[in-house]
Length: 75
Image (cartoon, rainbow, N blue to C red):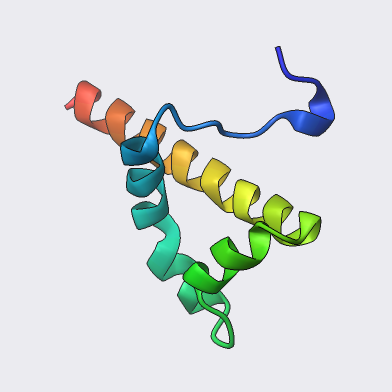
């Protein structure tokens, strides 16, 4: 189990990562009009602050994906 300071979403593969990123890309761009999600991803390779922000957004995407599965299963 990951410790609290390392608790974040860890996609299984590139396909899952791409799926999660697709869920949040437009929303990130809307919330940050002077920045783009692709730029955040690039900066995350070099900046721990941007990496943390990127991981936070992936966690939001994972929650959205989980909520969507629950709604589909309940219907």
